[in-house]
Image: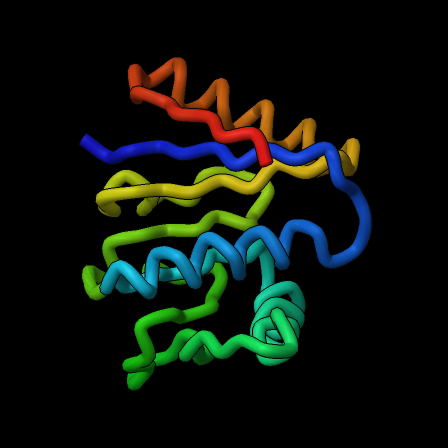
Length: 139
């Protein structure tokens, strides 16, 4: 069964969710996982991809936008099913994607921003109501 992990912080503001996603993706990549970062739309995916080139200034995380030839260990996309090439899903979209349960692990980022927090509560209820074991980590 898919492992569901919620990473929760009270920090709010532009870039907090992306910084958390970078941190989780970096850790998973260092453990040899392949990561798909799911965004709500194309604009969000582009913003995350661009931010990952600057997060943090001293680090590097091999990533690229989703596409038919994407081969990096970390792929940033939206909308379409990412296929079976990844084992960790970092969900930055407001809703749970239909393909989420095909991953070994799903990471959800919850920040102090009211809209993101409310969407996170809805995703938590989604997983809980379907019987998933949920782990929460306060950051």
